[in-house]
Image 1 (cartoon, rainbow, N blue to C red):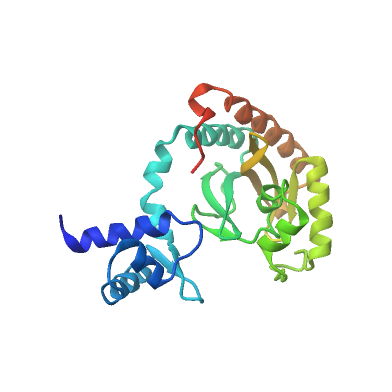
Image 2: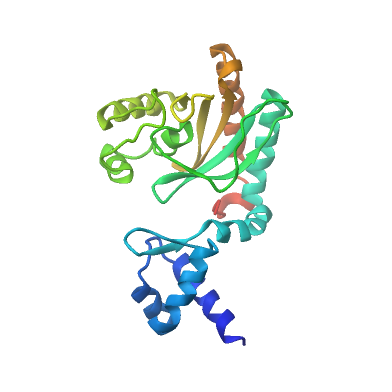
Length: 254
């Protein structure tokens, strides 16, 4: 076996198997690779974005590792089922539909379906956005306690626009509304160019993901958002009903 290649794969598996980021010493201990050997490998992997190095000098999986593994995600039946329903949502509303999960204390976008509109919002799979400004983020944390939310988001809510909720008390009040009604909005809180509505995808009383539809502000009337909400709720129910089939019962999204 080619030793350098083996070491790269060992490092990836060691980091991917942990929920928390790892230091150089921890990676060395897990892989039995000397720190002097592992350091330049980590630097190269960070430069190529297969790993990400945080300010505290801890390492986590990088965006290119996600992209490289996307073909696997494409093949999973659960994700494919959700994406099929997302395609139907787009057929009915002709606006972009996106799927997100919580990753690294942010909303991580793992799938999208685009409309045929000549003017449409641009987005990409693999991006991260704040929980507190996005419709996806609000429903993704809708089953969490206030203490869990505070720990997840932290004390500071940096505004992205003038409409972003800027303090934790106001944000928690908004989440109470989300919990009560079962869906959420982003009304120009992330971008002045977009309004968005999202619903949670629940499996076994746990929010495993969320789907949203975003609309350019210039064509996002309240009537249109309400119509999109009805479509999202219809397909949320279809997706969650499918979890009862044996093929999906023991399968995780990622």
